[in-house]
Image (tube, rainbow, N blue to C red; front, top):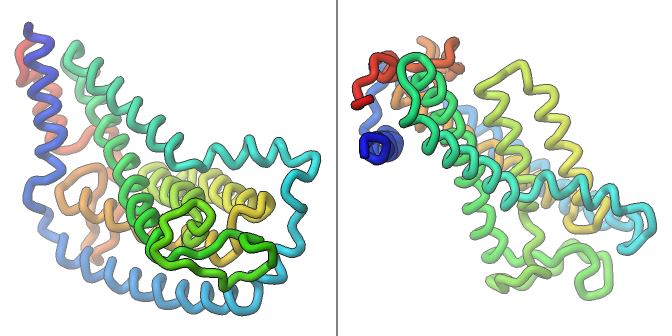
Length: 271
């Protein structure tokens, strides 16, 4: 019974720490810093996306191989690694595994695993938030995928269609892969080159497979990064995973354990 009691307590704590009031003394400075970065990113990104939509989209999709072209199977396999369902399932199952194993551990092992679990919470939410927003935008905008209607028309819209054929803007794969790339890089900066290369490759596969226009991929990338940035701020403001510097910049905590884990390491729960 102690195991299930500890499991319930840890589940409650894992949820409560995410919704508690922010407590970091520098959170306002970080919010202002984030707002400035958002403004620059969104303004410049929207301008570039609009230009690409007007000038590049129609010509770019004409350069891609036709659907059903032999030799595209490896690209289809590769693009699956950016599918939001698969990414969220992998992160979700990892979270569940951590939650089930942790109550059976004690001391430093418990603290280390909880530290890893909090980071998985961040990764999961950093992908989930922009993905959900992207799905809403897809349905509202209703942009037709390349060659829907038989022609390379990047201005084929059916607003509020909520159908797969008119769910091109933004690219869901780009949202998920760029959100994941930003989130992983935020925690483990040494992986940033690998993660950004991964995200760019996923974006390119969506073009090659004629699933999206270039501007769809760019919009997905922008939404993924901006959404993940918001989740990073949410965690940092609560002393979770990240710290906030005097200038408002958010950085990963140096060690595997975070403030409250010091108490956990002393086994506050029954053995």
